[in-house]
Length: 226
Image (cartoon, rainbow, N blue to C red; front, top):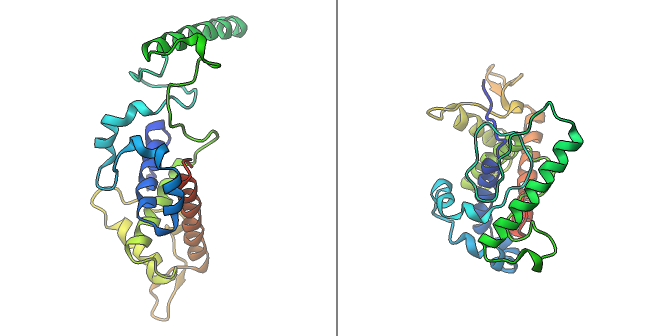
C-alpha cells in the first residue's frame, strides 16, 4: 500500500496551517494564542478556509527555509534558482554562489523598500514565518494530524479497540487514498469469534500519535512548527 510523501516546504506549511486551525478550536491553547495573536495576525481568519485558497493570498509571508535540490524552477520571489556545474572545484563554486546570493539578497531588500546598509543581515525581512530548523518527518506528522482530527471529531474518546478500529475503517473507506499508518496495517489478535482485533501495541502507538499532536499544538500555539 503506497504511503503519502510529505516532503516539500509547501506540504510542511500546509501541516502548520492545519494544526493552527485545530489549535484555534482547542480551549487549552487559547492563552498561548492570545499571546501570539500579533504573530499570526497576517494569517487572517483560517477557521473555514481551505489551505489552497489561503495559500494564494499568503504564500508571500513565507521565506525559503532550506537549501534543497529542486525538480522545477521556483517562482517564489524569495528563492534564487541556480545551475551549479558539478565539474568545477567546490571552493570556486561556493565562492561564486556566495557572491550571487549576497547580490540577490541586496536586490530583494531594495525591492521591499529596505536599504541593505541599514540591516545587520541581508537575509532579514524575506519571510516572517519560518519552519523550525531540522528534519520534519512529514508523513508521520500527516498521519498524526489525521488521527487527532478523528479523535477530536468523536469527542476525544478513550483510546481502545473501538476508536482504533474507527481509524482503520475511516482510512479504508476513503474514496481514493486508502493507506493506513504502518502500525495499523496488520492485526494479529482475534476475539473469541475469530474476528481481528486491535493489539495492545497498536493502541499504544495511537496514544503516542495523539501525544505527538498535542506537543505540536503547543508549539503552534506559541508560534512555532513543528
